[in-house]
Image 1 (tube, rainbow, N blue to C red):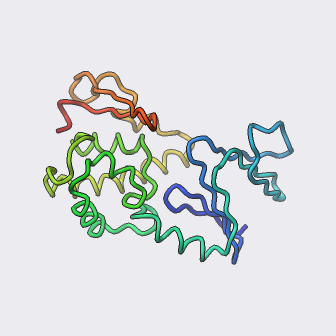
Image 2: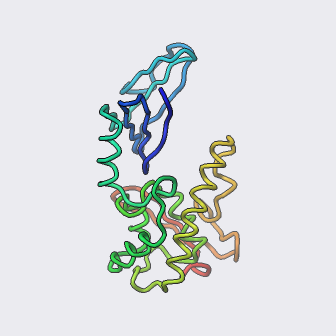
Amino acid sequence: MKNTSTYGKNILLNFEPYGIRIHLMMYGSIRFEEEFSKPEGRIRLILDFESGRMVVYNAPIVEVDFLEKIEERLSKELGIDPFRNWDEEKLFSMLIENGDRVIGEVLLDQSVFAGIGNILRNEILFRSGIRPDRMISEIPEEKLKLLIRITKRLSEDFLDSKLRGRGIKSLLRVYNSKYCKRCGAKINFCRDEFTGRKTFFCPNCQS
């Protein structure tokens, strides 16, 4: 294997000229084992290396094709990725085009913000001072531009903290909180009845 990369929430393994695309969705996992152990679920992929074995469990998407073709398909499906094709001006234009939608919904739309998950969405909105149920057309342009900058910076902070083995708990300001760490107000909480995603926001710090 030459290298690995990501595109949105997809993991790409480069076996040039071939590639493997993995999407873990909500329930998939990857384990690295020195020897075969008891399966943790449905095995979707096993790769044997000199240093050990990589096992992919429960991943809904495991695709093998020419890497160039995989990346081409993803580029048509996905929007702006903080680590691959970042473009603040284009992203701002896409937000304006989605003015009739609420910002919390659009942040999770992978055809706009590629790779943004629910925890990151909550933290981006808190740091931007924007309620998740706010219509994009009602948000001042400067706040939208601030949200875009924060999306890039916080995505990098999350990744850096994970790579250093620290996790993201120390970066959380609103997610799973009962009270606002900035003003002390009680955090508003709701759960999407269809997806189960949790939303947290401060009624004072976000408007």
